Length: 190
Image (cartoon, rainbow, N blue to C red; front, side, top):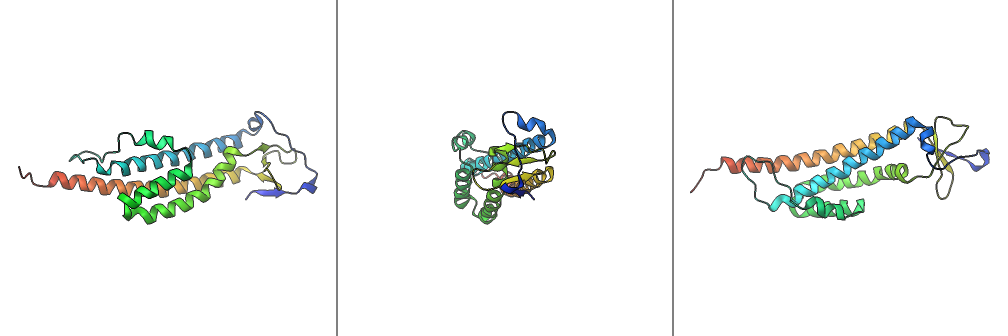
């Protein structure tokens, strides 16, 4: 767990350009956190495409369609919270059976996002007393010491949230796929 450092500890910090390169293992873990977060954002876009594709005719024997311009529309929405809200509203409209699951995911991913935001937007420093760690210099309050284990914990929480989202996508996709198979098994009345 990240540890606050008191101002009275007499510690000095050093920061600046390329500072993370002096802690390659931590920098790699931070890069991994950001890369895994992108997977959540991409999965959210996939779900959005499937939800938007609900009104496109299913072709028997083919995978459920995504809306042809869903990615373009979704990419214009820059705020992650706005994207979550957009998908939740679509769930209400076309996937009400997944609404509760998505609402739970939304709450958990918002908690997880704070760790990702610290990693991506934090003002990171070094301290000679902690040669294996990074120090987060917040806009106010005490500096906070992060270890490799702290970054791994953030990553684990991100991957757990992604797993939750992937399960929602899988259930929705399978439901659409089963519906598509049902269409192909229906007798031809013509």
